[in-house]
Image (cartoon, rainbow, N blue to C red; front, side, top):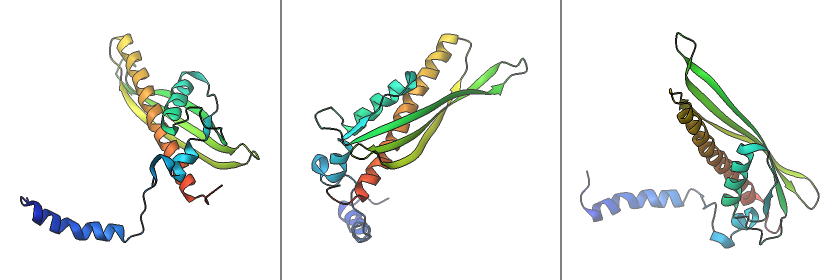
Length: 171
């Protein structure tokens, strides 16, 4: 273990220089005034059906910083597939474990001409222990849905940010 800060800095400096020479640039360069943040703030989230849709809409709006102050240029259409499947089974055929899967197919639509700019999918799953208390199991299923909504929303916004970063300026 390196205990001397100067020695640690001397060893890390070449790594930092190599990383800066590889051509990587920050995705959110420019902060709130940058191209990516500017594009994401002009995305409106279309209504999504169901409880999972409500959670997903809120998670997306939080991440896109869509507060309604910017006129929307894009619409994000999302269709969700939310499933719970039992896969751990005892001898008496009672389920001991469930898997909740949340998949989203999403499209970023340009409102000026209706063209689809991004058409992709995102998804994640979570394991749930089924316990004797039905209330505890339902609470675990709901908590899993909340977590999955956040995870899938992160995936969607990341993909939209990559798209926005690769677009020509002014478009």
